Image (tube, rainbow, N blue to C red):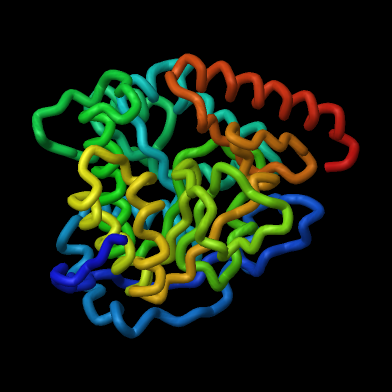
Length: 324
């Protein structure tokens, strides 16, 4: 088991901590729409991190300003990460954006979406299709423009850079969720008590969502900005040294139980009936909020799968037009 006995505590520079979304709703369907009023439950800022509010903006003025412009009333932003290959015309970014436009009242959520780009080609392509784009400089002299083979060195660097960037966003006082095709607003499936919510690869219908023995999948990740979550993310990144050559999802599986206990983090997994998984494909479009092309390698294969799912959604939506 991974232990953290010599890791120094970090100075927390997050600003406003807010609880996100409502309690779990009826299992009959995934609710639609933004419904910000019901998501803002009036939770006050976490006193353990509010003192450093001014410092956070000086550490990254451009990012802080972008997050402020994208944030919902409860400081939640939606983020997805792309490189040149994923954002090329007709590729994953276009499909991702289209899903918001054809989903059930999801188009207004685009104003809260920040696309994080790992190279200049991706940034330029992002600017042509979306107003909120950010260039993340990963460093190390690696060219992130092309598709990266799963578990290759460059792939691992990109995934861990994403993890580190997520910590920075939390420190600036913003919660987030990332990287999946949306048909309905999935945020309303995250209970207010959760600090971190993950999609998972498989989910037993009778499972407890707080049971940490499930296999997490990084296609959808929600995180609330507070000291518990920031501590968890920092320790998660530190654990990379204990699991050399593995991606952040694998390392998470190894440390999630200890870190959630250590930091007091409320961590849960959401049913694949709502957050669809190619590992356990449940395609009940009356309930489905998102779908992720996991358990599948190669961008061409992922695009083919997601385009098929998108086509099925459009057929379902057009044939049920009288009920929405």
